[in-house]
Structures are given as structure tokens and as C-alpha cells.
Amino acid sequence: MTARENILQSYQRISEHGLRPAWIELVPQEEALARADAVDPSLPLAGLTFAVKDNIDVAGVPTTAGCPAYAYTPSRSATVVRLLQEAGAIAIGKTNLDQFATGLVGVRSPYGACSSVYDSAYISGGSSSGSAVSVARGEVDFALGTDTAGSGRVPAAFNNLIGLKPTRGVFSMTGVVPACRTLDCISVLARDVNTAERVFRIAAQPDPEDWSARGFHPPAVDWTKGRFRFGAPSAEQLEFFGDAESARLFDEAVAILEDTGGIRVNIDFAPFREAASLLYAGPWVAERLAAIEEFLKGNADAVYPVTRQIIGGAEKLTAVETFRAMYRLGQLRRATDPEWAKMDVLLLPTTGTIYRIDEVAAEPVKLNTNLGYYTNFVNLLDLAAIAIPAGFRKNGTPFGVSLIGPAMSDAALCMLGSRIGNEAESARRAIAVAVVGAHLTGQPLNHQLTDRRARLLKTCRTAPRYRLFALANTTPPKPGLVREEGFAGPGIELEVWSMPEREFGGFVGAIPAPLGIGAVVLDDGSTVRGFICEPAGLSGALEITHLGGWRNYLATR
Image (cartoon, rainbow, N blue to C red; front, side, top):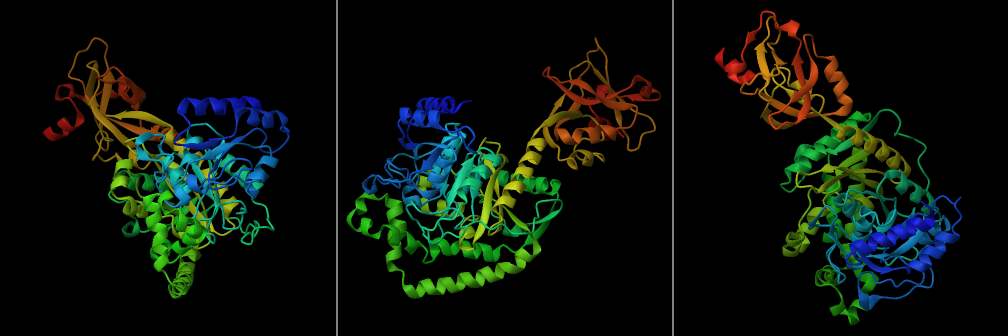
């Protein structure tokens, strides 16, 4: 599309979905169109649309940080916004957030609670809630969020997006309302790694105005080519808060990473986890108070109750406690060094589970804390991270994992994330395969399915036109399924398995004559690939059609 067409599409989709709760303020459409008409098509981000979390300044558009009483209208844009605009990208407007970027849930806002685009009963994640929703709906090409404790990665996971959290200081923080000023990062939300990396390359520029900026200095060692080591917590240190579907999907993500050349290494997650607990249980919450203390004194009623409770609790913290926590964080950082010596990159669930909006309303602090189990330590330990989609739970909500690396590993994480995404997409393309004998669950050749990451879809029967024979002289014993038009039998019991498309060729290649793969009609009239037998293979075979299936036959022997 042209830049103008892209703008028109953005505003059309926003009008279809409604302004709230994802958006707080839009740039006037005619203004955005004028910028599109003037954009140089040779620029690296020419014509791409983006949303900006409403704690990041866009010149001439109010910044509220999710609190109307706090609003001000900046005369210039944040440094990162300016860099993106100079590269040809066009800002559409400002998006909703957990007020003052305090929360991982996306519901702590007077502008409304955002929900996952996959199920409106579930939270969108936060605090970059509106940014994630706007990208997931296709309203913009990418969005800026912020990420202090996971605020960019969590909503990415809950909306099936990429969430890139750069190394602290690589993106300028000039023009951003601070949450924890020493830990804050602008983050990128996109539908694919390529877009996120393109944005990163533009935004990762030095800024002399920002005392925390340090530029981007990638390490000389590249662990993204060939084999690499990825760390993951041992089973007893993984926490899914009772969500078995998330646990299953994480195991699948581990397998996919192994398929891309990764070697799993079990690491001790304890020092990472203890560091995470310091973020809200320690004195860093006082930074949130430092950012809005004067405003809070005169406008306490304008602050969302849970947000006021969290930030206001810092008033009792002392300087002594701050220094003690800093010393403890230094000890924990040193304790993670032996774990990093074992691995190149750390793989974690982005969150252990997802919650419904009503669940968060009932337990706002506890469930928010649970969501930070795998995210809160990253900025405290000066690490880079990228959240990537990793499948869907059976209820349709998305699950995500995060790749976490040392400071300045941002570009390498993008490269590895892209490889994993390609591998995952290949794994998701699946073929339904029907088995009737030695490949059934519990039978001796079932491992030929499970070794290829196939999963059981259902148990059912063939259409009545099939006959079943116990073949002679086969090891292990195998049946032969034969289709005979006009025959009316009981139907043969079978299992239908879903096998990754890339594994199917090797599976078929291992099938010995007289068996092969053909089309099998099921009792519901649908057709899948499945085992069939050549007529020549029936010599000396025993017909067992009347028994209705291979397991029934084995029970008679």
C-alpha cells in the first residue's frame, strides 16, 4: 500500500473497533494524511503507522500517563518518536495504559480496561495495554510501549505479538514520563520480528540529553549461528500457577528451540527470582513515588486506587533500606554469573498463565505479582529480552515465551527470535494421520509418532466400507486396512494424530511394504491420510473386521 492508503486503513480499523479503551487520543486524520503525502518513500520506515503509549511524548498531543488530571501537551516529541518520524514512520495517536505505567494487567485506567483481542473476558496485559491491542487488531504496523517490570512483554504474550525490550540506555528516555527512572525502557510491539528489529535499528541512537543513555555496542561474539546453549529452569523451579496448558506449551517451545540448534541447560533460577522480588517488595517502588510525589500530594483522588496504594506505600521506605537492597542486588547479580557461564541465552515463559478481568478485579495485587514472576528481574540485572508467540491454549488464549540475553545482545535476540518463529510456524503446519494398529497409543510403534512431536487429536472409527486383517509374519504384529466399496461393516477403530508437516516425509519413509499411506474416510465423512494395505499383502492374513479394531483383536490372543 501507499503511505496514504496505510493511513486510511488505520483510521478505518480504529473506527470499526472504537476509540476506547485502546486509544486515548488520535492525531487528526487529515494531519496524518498530510504527513503520509510528504513522506520520502526511500526512508527505512516510510509509510509505516505506529501507536505511542501515553506516557511518551508526541508533540502537540496531550500526554496523560493514564491520569487526566496529570495531562500536559508537550511542544516536542520524545527522542525515540522523533527518530522514527524522521525515518518515515507516522504516529497515529496515544494509547491506553495502566496508570503511570504501574501494573502488568491493563485494567488500571480511567479510560477503560483493555482485554486480549483473542477473548474479551481475559486481560490484555499491561502496562502497555493499548499499544498491544492496537497492533494485534492491525490498526497500526507497530507500537511503542514502556517496559520496567514486563510492561511490554506481558501484553505481547497475551495478544500473540513480538515484544522487544532493549538493553537499558540503548533507547533514549528523553520525553518519557518516568516510572522507575533507573530501570525504565521504551519497548517495541510488532506482529513480526523483522518489523521490531527495523524499529530497533532506527531508535537505538545516542542521546546527549539523556544521562542514562549509553548507545548500542553489540558484543563481538555471535552465538546465533549453528549450535548454542539455552538455559531453562528445572521443573521444580518453573511456576505455571496451576495452568497445565501453559506448561505444555512451554515444553513445546523448548523442543522448538532444540530443533533450531539449541542445547538445553538446566540453570538455577533462584537468584533471578529473588532479584525479581526486589522490584516491588524492595525500595525501587520509591522511584515511582519520586516521579509523581508532588502531583500525588495535591491530586490523590485522581490516582487509580490500586496505583495509589502501590506508589503511596513507598512513603515508609528509608534510605537505609535502599542501600541494603542495592547491596543485595549486587550479590544476586554476582550469583547469576555462574548460570550465565553455562548458557548463551535464557528461555522462560513470558508469564506462567493468563487471568480473566474479573479474577484480577478480585485479587489485583496478588495476580499482578504472579504475572511478573518471569519478567521483574530483567531490568534489575541489566539484561535484554524479546517476547515471542509460542502457541495457544485450548481456550484460545495465546501463550508466549521470552528469550533473555546479556546487555547489548538485542540484535542477536532478534535473529534468534526470527529463527524460532520460522521453526514454530513450520511446526504449526500439521497433517492429520490415522493409525489403526502398532502405532496406536500404548502400542510398540507409537513412539514413531511422539518422537516426531505428533499429538493425538481424537479416537473414532472408519466409515463402514473398510475391512481389517491381521497380517502374517510381521514384527511387531501389524494389521492391514483395506477399503472395499459396497462393504458394510462395523467401522474400524482408529486414532487420528496431528503431525508437523516437516516430519511427515520421514514418517512415511519408515513404513514397510505392504503398508502405505492413502486416503481414509472417517465415520463422520471426513477424509484424512492413514495406513492402508496393498491387496498382495493379505496372503495368509486373518480377517478380524468383525472385532472392530486392533485392540479388540489383541485382547483375544
